[in-house]
Length: 341
Image (tube, rainbow, N blue to C red):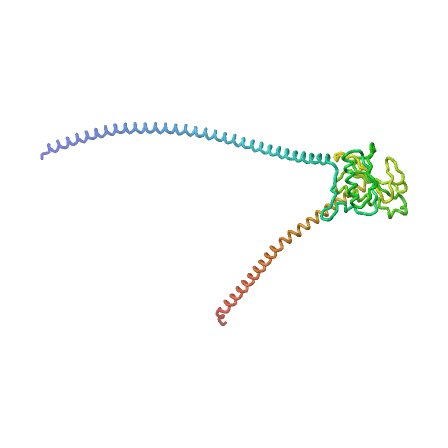
């Protein structure tokens, strides 16, 4: 080819290259604009999504705060409910305690209104009046004209009669100056004892009857005495009492809520109450001892079995120890002798 042909080819190639460059540049600009638009749209969508997420987060935070408030209210309500329950339990306990106090008061009131009585009879060959048995005692009984008092006097008369005492009479007095409760009069030798002091059982019988009535939970029991040298002189305040005799005066049943202060200073009354308390405690201790002995007797076979089992375990342990020692000796015998030095 000639030079002009090559030059033409080169010119046309240059023109094609320039055209291709223009086309590719235009395409790049057009595509770049579209890509920028897409990116702008994506950025705007991201901003919208981010704004929505922030709004949603704000809503969730508000809901969380509201939930915390509701939880705090629930806790406060639970605390109030617990406090109310504790207060209700306390009021229930106070009401129960008050009901128990009222029940005890009602029982005391029923006991106050109930007539005085005591069991008179024989159980398993033992008479209820055996504690009063003593010979040669005469008992005179006086009572006011009250049905309950007459009944109580009759109970005393039947009891002492069953103990072998002589009941010289049961006199009903109208308008007598009797104290509430039971007053037991006896002879007391003031100063130098007379020749009959040792043989006179009046004071002994009075103490026996007082202790017997106290043991049956009778209230308002009094011990009063008259001078043995003046015991034959009777007065409205002091009865005449013969040797080996007592006088029992029965008045109204006393109200336990208004105990006579005179009973508090009577040394014999306090002595008898303490004696009865000692006897009650002694009886409880004896019963407790019998219960313990019974329980130990029931437990004895089991304790023996446990002791025998323990002895067998000890024997087995000793046998096992001997076996270990035997095995150790056998092992030592099998060891080779030490090398000579």
